[in-house]
Image (tube, rainbow, N blue to C red; front, side):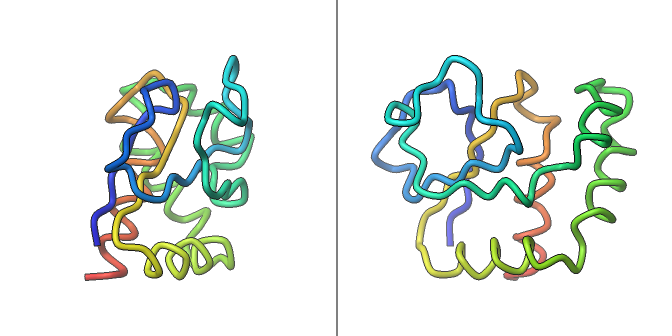
Length: 117
């Protein structure tokens, strides 16, 4: 299983496989038909409170990672996401953050890797 992470604003590529949006809000400035999203898992995104607290502050990323993991661990949304991903050979977790390495999709990929190893 190949799990990639990509900004929604980057061009769609054939090797993306199944594209899963993992944000709670639809990305600004992107039309649904242009996003090439196969599935939108809103429920797996960080809560509004956690998202606002984190505010993509690099100094808060480690704490965000721990809080986000605690927030979704054992939830139906995480189980559904992992089950959905297991059905596909290649998956790209799509996000809108400007931070390519400090966002919820990165945390999710790590969690999924741990669960499917």
